[in-house]
Image (cartoon, rainbow over all chains, first blue to last red; front, side, top):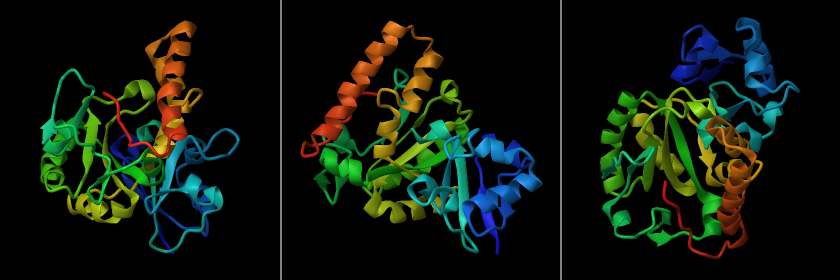
Amino acid sequence: MTVTVRVPGSLKQWFGGRDEAFCEGGTLGECIDQLDQRFPGIRDRLLSEEGRLGAVLIFLNGENVSKLDGLATAVRDGDEIGLIPFAAGG
Amino acid sequence: MIIDDPRSKFIFLYHPLVLMGRSYTVYQGREMTNGEVLEYWGKWIVLGDRPSLDDLAEKLDPFVENKEIPCIKYDRSPPRGLGVQECVMMVYCDRRNRDEVWKILARFGIKLKAWVTERDTMEMWLPGGLLLERWMSAQGYDEATRNAVREDAGKRLNHIFDHPEEIFKSWEQ
């Protein structure tokens, strides 16, 4: 089961200079944990100090995950996670 | 048509009717109320450098002209004061049409799919909202100016929340 993570150019350095990465997991939180193993520190970039959403905007198939189930949002094979700077949503 | 006025920090793509006083917040030919905008209006977010967004704007303009896309705006330069290093393009539409608009964007190679509702954006710019506070810090405003800005933002935005039946009116940007 593979989930694609996409980032804009300004965040490519988070993923070794690439604008997409791949991960696996049953939930968004599990995907972030797995990404953090491959790209150490990514969890701190994506989540607040308290481990909550809000440091960047995270989308699952285009939908803001804060309107879904947050880190508990279920992900499925072929899903796409998008990350953009928080302020870009305003 | 592309409206590139150097006095604005944004470059806009509108249908010419908007310049004749018609609203761009339209669904099925009817101007939307504040309540409808809060419920349905939003935008697909596209990030990129200025040349790439200029190029994309040229390609999307025909879709604005034929009313498949209601309105687009994008940054003249990256809003670094808000912590964003790229220009941001906002492709506006009603949620009920967003899949059709996304297909147009995907046709031009856009892959990162990010839908932000206008309600969410307005909440970020309300007094105490993260973006309003961050923007005022970047401007270096003193506390008196901050309070005046908060009051103005609150007055404008709360009017929209408090009067859902009125036709939505945007403000100069």
